Length: 203
Image 1 (cartoon, rainbow, N blue to C red):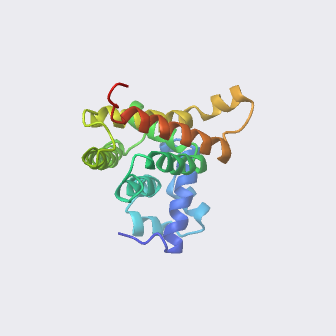
Image 2 (cartoon, rainbow, N blue to C red; image 1 turned 90 degrees about the vertical axis):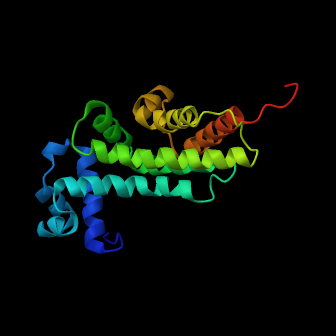
């Protein structure tokens, strides 16, 4: 595994993210990426093997912090949904084309990496299910909650604002800025927590 702190490696990943999000996979060349990164094209072969390897590593590095958060203490209580969504929105706000790229690969099979992305999402699925079981065991959520239903609800609340960001902003006549996304994360996190809460007797 290469070190993201290596300046050449980091520049190549950053350049790859910019290039792949700006254009179709087949139109992006390793030479374009190397030039943008101010690196020798041979370094792509050295670090990533080929263009597809660089593409997959770019996706892994972008999703890694979001997936790693499943292993942190953030979701050790139901109130952590707000913080998790806030982190997700902030990550995707900085890379607004990324959710669309993932959707294109998965739904339309554009570009390589479908199996690779599904593997990353499966990690998210298993990690989320494990966290949900811990919340059930600690009495914070209803034991009857189906983990796949909970996951789809979460993914819907997380991805839809980013996928339709341009349309929403046009309708609102304003930007989905930090303050707006912070408010959205607070509401959606509370909706998730309330939806999974244990029903009170007589309620």
